[in-house]
Image 1 (cartoon, rainbow, N blue to C red):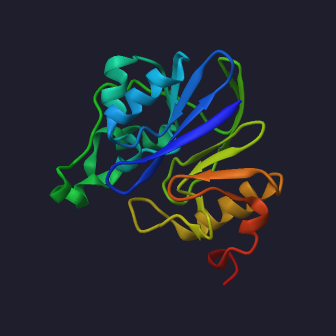
Image 2: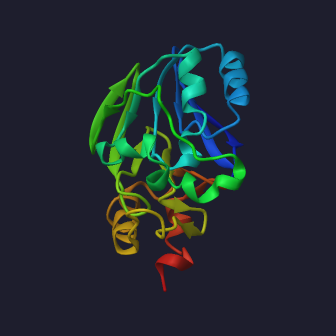
Image 3: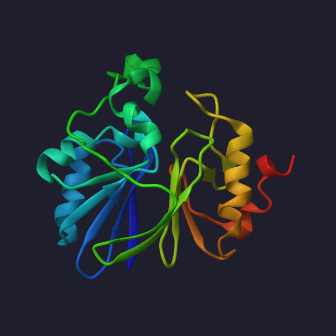
Length: 207
């Protein structure tokens, strides 16, 4: 199993590409869809599903374009279903100078919650990690985790957007993510990867 990513879109959001021997998953198609589509072609693996860590605009901006070419299932938490079509909730209404708002009309999502799932040979432990948004999910694979905007390298997600909550975010990090193996690579929604061991010293969690 391998993971790679491209920082894309308005605020350099990480779009992740996870492969096994037979399949490809995409997590958070962030923008610049032509780059995502080119990357899919170059990987020579069939795209089987798209997973969303959450549905803020910078994590779904390329969703429709990808689905128009690859009509695959989309997985997300039910708490953010209406974010897909509501610019006030997904945050894009605040950034109209960038040619927004962003919505998606193609996605017919399948809702998932905390628990273990298997998708096309991928064993994934789904963690419900709200706080940055009400439906944030983290995806834990065998050798790494993709955590969206819950936890960053020496940072945490913002909580000033719709239904964000700082106390809930910190609980998600300490009660869920900090229970993972300390050496596990953590891939966030923005910026470089980190590890749980490194984030034990995160200044935003030790104030």
